[in-house]
Length: 248
Figure 1 (cartoon, rainbow, N blue to C red):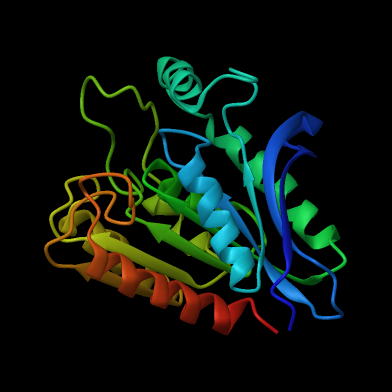
Figure 2 (cartoon, rainbow, N blue to C red; figure 1 turned 180 degrees about the vertical axis):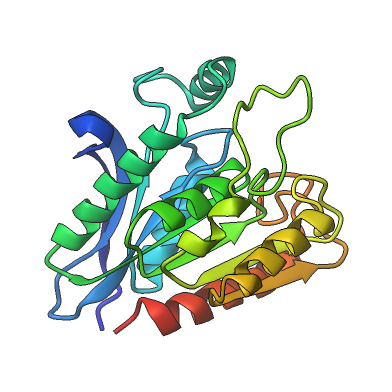
């Protein structure tokens, strides 16, 4: 199988047919067919680190796309400025997020190298949004990396204005992988257990890993929170999960 891929900024149709910016890392057509991954960026925005994650998926044999969730508010702005604008607005509306992910999924399915299967992954606020997309769309697999406020609500003073999603656990149509830090507060280990219990009660296939000595953002290689041992094992869990549900 060829390891060649093309990575570039493109335009896709998002929620309501809006044209939005996105970053695509897609395989060069060599006769093989691959699964697709929608990468949902964290609250700091559509940044270089998230684009690197998309390229990592392409290197490992998946088509990937990162929709710029803040494009409407701040087209052409730096990730920091766009994130500040989005925070001031209370974050991305849930309905719009679902529409943007749906558009990204349709783009992935349209590629000549697509096998028809699409998964979603998100980090921090994107982890919550990954769960939201998974309970709202006909996806094949989902990964929630320390998604805050799937259970519970943001503390007073938080710029994020969202509600809990745990009551939608019975609507989950695809297997969910959850990767969390034992020292995280949002979500806390107690929050993770509430979600675990809700999915178990609903009979939904899922697998959760909670890493000791890791807090929030332990995947982020450019931040002090980075924990190599947890991140390396987390990536292996992701490859196993998508290898089972998206590949082939």
